[in-house]
Image 1 (cartoon, rainbow, N blue to C red):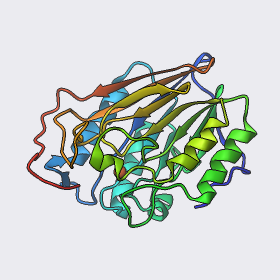
Image 2 (cartoon, rainbow, N blue to C red; image 1 turned 90 degrees about the vertical axis):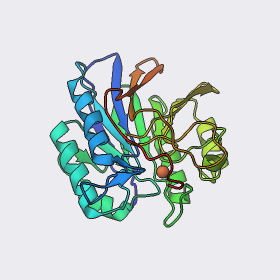
Image 3 (cartoon, rainbow, N blue to C red; image 1 turned 45 degrees about the vertical axis):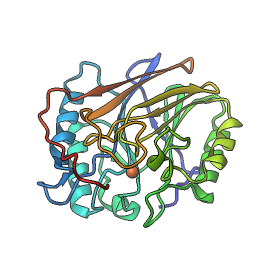
Length: 279
Ligand SMILES: [Fe+2]
């Protein structure tokens, strides 16, 4: 679906005046089969454990961001499951596709009165932009001209709002050889646009199944653990990590500051098969 910045962007009133609170859940890799496992871990179980944790938090987020690889097999059943689950959480939920996803199938099934297709969200003093970096049939990412124009038009239109830009693939090297080969191929084009708009305060992604948190050029560059299995930081070749499933909270303050923290499901028993090579 073509993102259309000329349409009125989706607008939410934050629960508090001074801060927008978001939760990011990413790389859930849900299968059509409820018993589906990635590297031996049942992806529905860990996803549900995370969502239950989010629901138990005292401070309800203003919105949930689901940043790609939501499905492992791109099946209608996996998206229907996610749509139903997010609807039950009763939070405004926004999503973007990853390399394992099928954007067309997502458009059909990942949509209800709580799961929204909007790719431009205005909330308090902030604008959230969700980009599609998926390339059909490829693991790496790229932003096509339509996506780059969408980003630029959205930033141009709201110069007075701080911006958080979300996508699936990492727009910079993270120091892990195999993952750096499958990041955002045209990161230079993306970064050139970002550099022209000082209101961009954060870039947020998934894909790398590990925590990443760096401040560079006044921007927070943030990646978040998968809600299922992790990849080992710094590894040359594919390697699963031992860390627990995780998710991220973001506090976006009205003065443009970002505070963010990763939470993990430490009390969940899980048996990742570390002997499996490949992803
Ligand atoms: Fe991915």
